[in-house]
Image 1 (cartoon, rainbow, N blue to C red):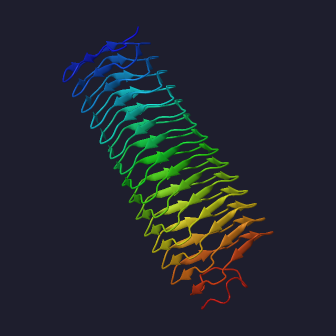
Image 2 (cartoon, rainbow, N blue to C red):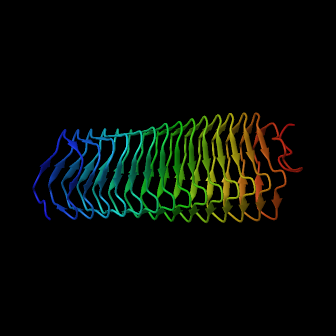
Image 3 (spheres, helix red, strand yellow):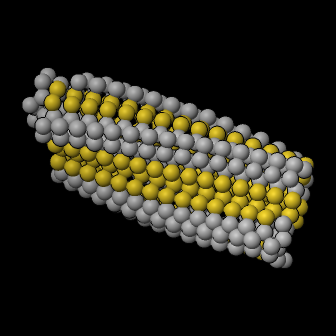
Length: 365
C-alpha cells in the first residue's frame, strides 16, 4: 500500500489499535501528536519510509504496542519528542536505517520498552538528547552500527536500562556527552568494536553502572574524557583489547569504581592522562598485559586506589610519568612481571603504598 503524498491525522485522540503493515510512505505525514495509547497495536511492520514523517510528539504511552519491526528508513523522520512512556512497547526490531531520524528528544521513560534489537544502522540518527529515564528499557541488543549516530547528550538516568549487549560497531557513534547517571544501567556486555566511538565526555556519574564486561575492542574508542565520577561503576571485566582506545583523560574521581578485572590487553591504550583522583578505585586485579599501554601520565593522586593485584605483565607499558602522588594507594601485590615496563619517570610526591622494591624509589616515603 502506498501513501505517497497522503497525510493521516490522529492528533489528540485516544488510540487502541491500527493496521498499516508494509505500507510505503513517500513524503507523507502521519500525525499522532498528543495521542494517548492505552492498548492494542499500531502496526507499521515492514513499512518503508522514503521520506515524510510519523509524528508522536507529546504522545503518552500507557499500554499497547507501536510496531516498526522490519521497517526500512531511507529518509524521513519518526518523532517522539517530549513523549511520555508509562508503559507499552515501541518496536524497531530488525529495522534498517539507511538515513533519516528517530527523535526521542526530551522524552520521559517511566516504564515500558523501546526495542531496536537486531536493527541495522548504515546511516541516520536516533536521538535521546535531553531524555529522562526513570524506568523501563531501551534495547539495542544485537544491533549493528556501520555508520550513523545514537545520541543521549545531556540525558538523565535516574533508573531504567539502555542495552547494547552483543551489538557490533564497525563505525558510527553513540554519544552520552554531558549525560548524568544517578542510577540504572547502560550495558555494552559482549559488544564488539571494530570501529566507531562511544562518547561519555563530561558525563557525571553519581550512581548506576555502565557495563562493557566481556566486550571486545579491535578498534574504535570509548571516551570518558573530563567525566566526573562521584559514585557508580564502569565495568570492563573480562574485556579484550586487541586495539582501540579507552580514554579517561582529565577525568575526576571522587568515588565510584572503574573495573578492568581479568581484562586482557594485547594492544591498544587505556588513558588516564591528567586525571585527578580524590577517591574511588581503578581495578586491574588479575588483568593480563601482553601488549598495549595504560597511561596515568600527569595524573594527580590525592586519595583513592589503583589496584594491579595479581596482574600479569608479559609486555606492554604502565605509565605514571610526571604523576603527582599526594596520597592514595597504587598496589602491585602479587603482580607478575615476565616483561613489560612500569614507568615513574618524573613522578613527584609520596611513594605509593605496596609498590615492589626498586620501583619508584626516588619518591619520598
